[in-house]
Image (cartoon, rainbow, N blue to C red; front, side):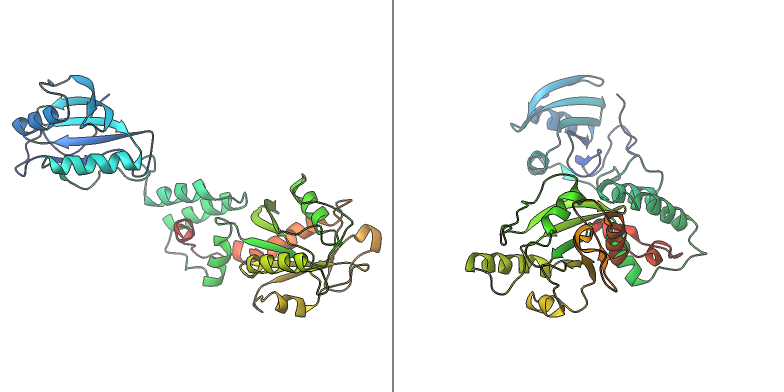
Length: 339
């Protein structure tokens, strides 16, 4: 183990003792607190920390400041490291106790991404760490390269930036339709497992069911809602009212029905209190039984899997258009990662 390059000599500091964090910001398993001071002052601080008479090149395991077991290493007359657990509460407690000892805090040395070669790569790594959509990986790499060659590019449009942000922070999509049109079967087919109860009895789905799906490379929070009908029993109406609050916050709606259960018109969306600008994809359910949908409708079947790929592409295109992904401008992707 060697000390980090700190720009500090053998500890001579005309301002007395100081400390800083030399491991990356944020919680980790171990945090390294660097203490610098003139020799007599660092002797005093190490003594109070439980490591008296610690010589240069020596290390000791102590219960430091009565807070946590720590490894104390003295690298030189005026430089020592205390290696402690990296939890936020522990670090806050050490900060208070060190300042009570007269050890002033100086700006932390380590960047958030010490492995990054530059600021753009650090931002890229931050975005990749939280991005849920497979489609965003190549896009982020491409935009990072564009930022390094920024002069030929202009900023992408604000609308496209909002769409691309959905590749990092998954948007929400509500499946809305009448009872018994196959919503739960479709949700289970898209998820590849049973997440919604399937029954021929109207009103079986009394609560909305959420699941994360990847549709054409876009991760979405998919919400299967109770069947919407005006004449249902009171428990069913209550369930719809509860779901309506969730649906109103969704980024897109998949509006579904079939020839047996009927179709929901725009007035149904008004009942739910949805904004007129909420994008809607019309889907004709159970196309294996009733045939393809009409004009402007996408025919699907949760039973046979027919139309599922087209549905996935349709939802993705509704939320993140090809035009947004192909925009030649610069995308400040860290805005979406830090939101």
